[in-house]
Length: 432
Ligand code: ADP
Image (cartoon, rainbow, N blue to C red; front, side, top):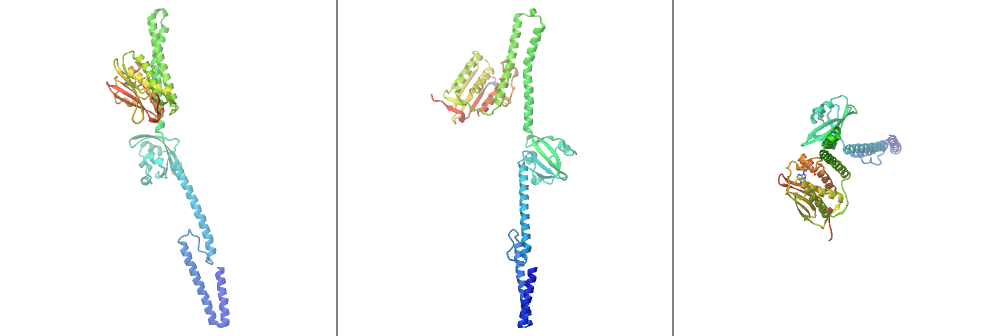
């Protein structure tokens, strides 16, 4: 403003001098000319400023006279605001990324309980689609009566356990609703399907162990009470010996169960095993010797073993798996049956240990359950032959620890084929 005034005064002085020197008309003409130049320069400045306003990211045009003093602070403020917006955006992005990275699902609702936002985990848990479900009531999206009852409460002290079925899969979700801000709501979802399954398995396991130990304990208690109640002389020696033999048998059975349970828990403590080179054919030979003793000449044994084939693993574990399959074949194959034991390498380098029998066989629906703890197709037969129902569960764990696979093929009344297939990475070829 000051410089404009100064320019006018200077032009006026210049006009006055020219008027005094060349006459008033020339003086006024000079003043008019000066004012015209000022208007033109000012117009040029305004048009440069207009051009700049189209892209405020660039600095304002330089040397624009009186406008410099106005535009410089405006531009500085603009830059400060822009930086602040950038920082805020970065902060919001960071919060959004953190919310996306949450292992739990997060859903925000407005005061009318309409969906505002949710992270990817919540989409997977509940099957939300933010693009189509946004601004829709959560009650229309999550249609479960127990959720409606829960969400319509006035206070939410604890979470809700919700069982939902998504794409044919049963899921257990824990949902916690919390009010926040100005009447908004936050729902946090957690998938507890696996935890629930583990809890059920744990309960079943405790129930099974108790059930398994109860039978021999009841028998033992019965005999002990009888022996205690009866005067020693009234019990013939032969009967006493029979009782003692039965008690011994039940005690041994309980001991086998406890030993197998301990083996299982040891095996479970680590997922894989390195071990050393184990000459499997030697293990099979000694398991066969024990097997022949159990069979008592009632079965025919056929063997087909490659002595140069070894496995990188734990000898004690492999020995247990090898003899378990042979013992089972003997126990579930009637007299005069044939048991074929093979140890060979496949074309792709994998090694297989297989035990084939001509025994009672297994129905197709039972095959997938054989490796469950205490699962027996015929409880009576298993118990009468000293089975604990844990043998195949142990074998499966050993197999897993050696990165191998347990394959079971069977036909009821025809026989079974149990195969342990070891990957090439575990196979070692011995020099003779
Ligand atoms: P068990 O101690 O009862 O033999 P396992 O875990 O070794 O326990 O086997 C589980 C069940 O699998 C057995 O009870 C039996 O019903 C079935 N089974 C295992 N091996 C054979 C086989 N070779 N032929 C028929 N059934 C078998």
